[in-house]
View: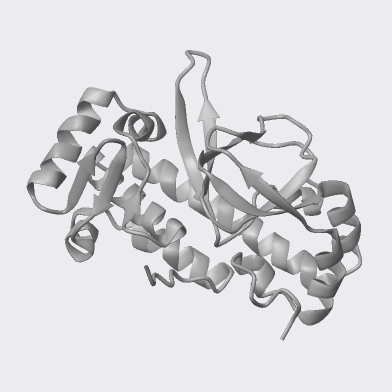
Length: 240
C-alpha cells in the first residue's frame, strides 16, 4: 500500500509505492473556486492538478466568442498531464466549472520525476491518452447526437465525478458547455423534468432516475467510461 493509496484522486491512489514516495513530498493542496482558469490554450503549463472534488472542463473557443466543452476531468484523472512529458503548451483552456479541491505540483519538477520513472511516465501517458479519447468522443457526440442525448450524457458524467445526484449546475452554464442557446437547453431540461428523470430548482439539478437517464443518453456515456476502464482502470464508484 502506497502513501497515497487513500487519496481521493484515482491517479494518485493507484501509483506504485515508489512513485508515490517520489511525488508525495512535492504535492501542495489546491482550493479552486468555480470559474478559476488553470490555463489558457497555448499557455505554458506551470502546474499539474489532481482534483479530489469538483469538475474541470477543457474548453475550445472560436473567433466569434463562442465556446464548447471538449471534455471533463475530476477525481478520476489529472489536468495538464502532458506537461509531465513534453507537452509544455496547453492545447485548450482548462476552467474549473464546479468548485474543486485537490493537489497540485510544479510542472517542471513533475517532468523531472517522470523522466526518472518508467512506471510514472506510462501512468501519465495513459491518462493523457484518455483525455484525447474523451475529446474525440465528445466531438463525435456533438456532431451526431441530439441535445437531449448530449445533456443526459453530460449529467451522468458530472454525477460520476461529483459522486452525487445533486449538482450545482445552472441552465446557463449547461447551455454554454453544450454550445447551444439557453432557450433550447431549457426546453430539453423541462422535458426531462416532466418525465421524472431530473429536478431543476434554483441553480441545482438533481438526478431522480439514473437508469432512465442512461436510456435517454447516447452511447457516448458508456463509451467514455469504457475508454477510462481500458486505458487507466478507472470505473465510476458511485456511493452517494
